[in-house]
Length: 299
Image (cartoon, rainbow, N blue to C red):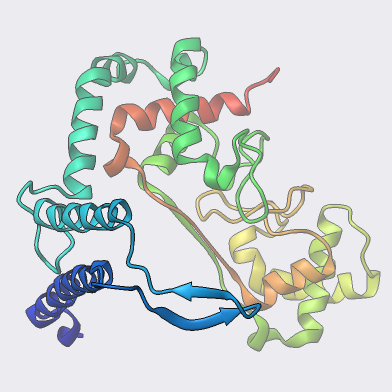
């Protein structure tokens, strides 16, 4: 891998870029020379008397290309573009983002600090705080949980009362700040198709779904031996582990025999990224308040 990060490739790219631009300028110059005397045709002729003449490019068109070339060379001097050359202005996406964040923090910092001193329950009832929290949610959370918090397959619905890791204010805040990783190990090789199907029918029966009674009886024993360690002996889940409650009708990865068998066979891994480093404590608290409000009574 060091071969691809050495200075050689930076110099190589810079040389190829400059040579290509200069070659374009030379080629343009050769095509702009006006021949003396009569202009010859290219030899192409249509309908016996319609000939294509070898005229040079119009001056105005040539100068547009020259201006573009000069602009390109000037840009490469001022901004990054020639290998590892950083440009005379020292601009980069990172520095621009840092400057914009600093300006935004200077403008909105006092507002966030005001909210940071309030309890999450109070923020969840504060219209101004919820308006700010909603904007933060749309920017940082809606990509996975949808703009209304309704989630989608594999991404939890935040508008109901079903919580994988707990729905109290402090737990929601900790989830947003530190992230979560939930893992369901695969049992395909350990159990085999028959036992997996038995367990799937037992799981389906826990929430009142249609299931084969014989398979339910067989699957109950396997569930108690293997699955109860995380989901509990009654299948009600364990929020300390992020293990879902299997007795309700809320399914993160889909219900039905096929989906449940696939989950047991292949396992699942869900990750909620940490946002504390990116957003800071005040914004995380506002987000927690907004998420708490999504499942508030009367909503």
